[in-house]
Image (cartoon, rainbow, N blue to C red):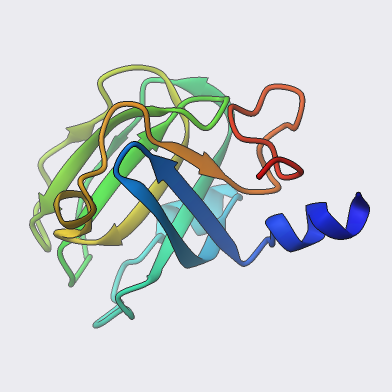
Length: 144
């Protein structure tokens, strides 16, 4: 079983699934105040299946902005279980407008703009990553 869990989850990627299908992204993790503050600032391009997973110590209302962010992004908010909360699609580079979640979130995934729409992601989407507490996860690492 341990081999299966390792195969299902890897700290360097996230899996997403929903009634639309599934997708996998290679991610960098932002799990400290410094890495969360830096985010994807000054990144000039990002591969289509790459992103950044922001990990917060608790679940609460979240809001992001695009200060010093040079690429357009889709910002997806997930709750403590890894279930979809909401998304801010096609965030405008360098825009400092607040882009809030629609409810409490603990995990935030930033991916290239347009991918939420392209895949048809929305309510019911779940994220899987080893940082999500297995006992609370909507889609635990050792589940297929």
